[in-house]
Image (cartoon, rainbow over all chains, first blue to last red; front, side, top):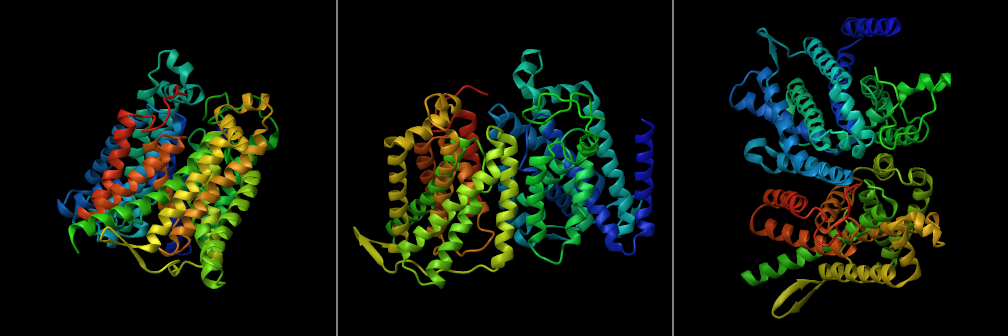
Amino acid sequence: MRRSALLLALAAAVIALIPVVAPNLFYVHLAIVTCLNVMFVLGLAVIARVGQLSMGHAGFGLLGGYVSALLAMNLGLPVPLGLLAATLAAAATAALLGWIILRLRGVYFVLVAFSFGQIVVLLALGMEDITQGANGLVNVPAPAVFGYLLNTKTAFYPLAVAAAALVGTGVWLLFRSPFGDAMAAIAENPRLTESSGVDTHVYQVVAFSIGSGIAGFAGALSTHYFQFISPDSFTFWDSVSYLTMLVVGGRVGVWGPILGAVVLTPLPELLRSTQGLQHVLYGAVLILVLLFLRDGLVGLPARLRGLRRTSAPHPILEHSPERPS
Amino acid sequence: MGLGTVVAQTIVNGLMVGMIYVLMAIGFTLVFGIMRIVNFAHGEFYMIGAFVFAIVFDSLGVPVAVSILAAVIVVGLSGVVVERAIFRPFTGDELNGMIASLGLALILQNGALLVLGPSPRSVPAIVDGTVSMAGLVFSLSRMTVIGVGAVAILALYLLVVHTQFGRAMRAVAQDPEIALVQGIRPERVYPIAFALGVALAALAGALMAPVLSVSPFIGLTPTLKAFIVVVIGGLGSIPGAVLGGLLLGLIESAAGTFLSAVVADIAQFVIVIAVVLLRPWGLLGKKEREA
């Protein structure tokens, strides 16, 4: 317990020092993008908690981004209200979609959620009257907090950190609650959970809504940061990136998703010189982690110590028997 | 142009596009039915097939039929390798097999980007000219796509229904353990089934290369269409894939011609949701116990 408190304090210190010690603003930008990705991956982790994977995750980010941007640009709605609207719009869409498709076998969820993500991109391209098509929306307003316009990287950074911390804490509390236990039980064995009186359908729909709502929120925040959104802003390949971060970091608990985003967001920047190579490596890392490190990076210390208790491998999530921290 | 010509061309376009969707969907549903892998890399094999065809036919000047065959064989053989190297460890593990296919998609698409570059290349038409029937004029190249696709589907149907290997595949699809008891070795069936599935995607890619241009990024849309088709037609059902694919092609073509592309996109998704709500096992799929 003391060690984790120490680690948390150390992380907080590093986070606070980034804008001070960063040699240039690009590092602050990277830190902001990392915070945004942390939120996306945590959203995906909530859905993975009930044993599902959403390959339309970026689609909800795109939806949220357009909702908030259009409300701010056309109705002059303050950005915080736009963020709320984006979150609710994504969550409500997911609830409706989830209610329909989550009654079926997992593979249908995968197919339809992916199709949904693609349809959102096609609609953003096609509905030119509203979305300006492929050109996208430019000059999306930056958020203002207490009359303070956060239109520089250094000014936006604290907001991004606060938002990521808020989402992280929320997901942590969710996973620790009885509701979170029921979610994990569903991933473990849906039929057994159903027979012990848990309405698995409702839990799965709620988890999909919460996870997608987080994606909508992160997409909106990202749009106000870049002050721009286009159909290319959040595509299927972004969903693949979030999934890679989740799997590489570790699928259980909140630290795996956070670690995955923190490690994998800056990494491609180091390999930027060769177009395409970074993604080839991403794909290779994904497959290697699946083969040799199922619990992801957070499982690495236990693996190295060789202290991992032997337990029957879980068919979907590879849960460790103890409650995740 | 009279209305008759417009309608006829809409139908021919719809059937051509639909035939491509059918080839994509059959390959996808075959791999899922037998190996239980949702192959997100399916469209990347379409892309590779299109590239192999473009290089062999256009750059090397090899005859059309041989070029198509080359695309199918190259991709089929690479399918055997990929099955062994990447998917074999995930046999029976739907979720992680699917994640592995996403990694494979990243590698294939960006590998193609590294080797071949991002700019799209166009491929000359495989046949020129038109045919006229009943006073209506059709482009010969589109009719060829429809014809070749139909022959491939018929051949596959005969293979699955009337040969010993086809029976073995169906047995493994139903229950690998019971198939094993009957003397069928699933690990012999998997690589061939996977190769067959991706070879169909390569055929689709080779046929479409002259119609659309070829680039590393062309794989995703056919994957999406394959997903939509199998949900509409019924997962694991080959007749369902044929019906669903042709239907999707015709609807898309008609909505695109007479309404707008946006309406066509929305219509597809609405149909998917309607099928999932009203007939979740698909138009021609079999009702199965919920897992």
